[in-house]
Image (cartoon, rainbow, N blue to C red; front, side):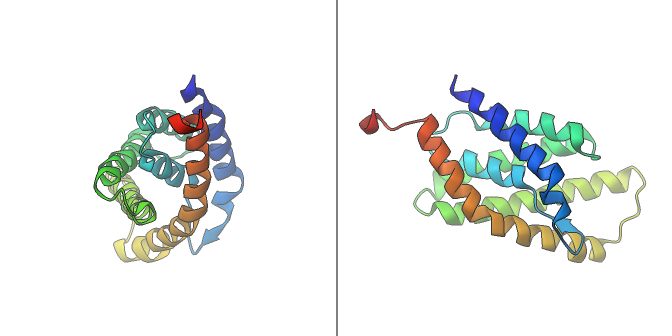
Length: 166
């Protein structure tokens, strides 16, 4: 039952991403709110379902994205993977882990997207991709990291209450 909260939250994030956030661009880069949400959810120590959230998010995003679906799956699952690793190692500084996962996840997602688009024949100059798309996206995702982390932390406390509060 606790995993059912993922459906409306991720669906709302995907709708928000496609309707509003993708229109707010810095140069040619834009924020990926679902990537940031998945990173924040996976960093919560008492959460037991980050992989299901990544699956639902990748499926929803695959429907609206022009990228091939393996790129979306690799990107979102790598974010959850690195968040779970960092949540075990840097558990005392969760915001530092959030920034690290957001930066690493954005870089991996853009790298996989770049390689895939290059393999299918889309000529992309590397310096322009880095300067016009990747770096602005990193900045926008990093700006979203703190408010999204706080919101997701509160939702995780609501979904997984501590034994003391019951």
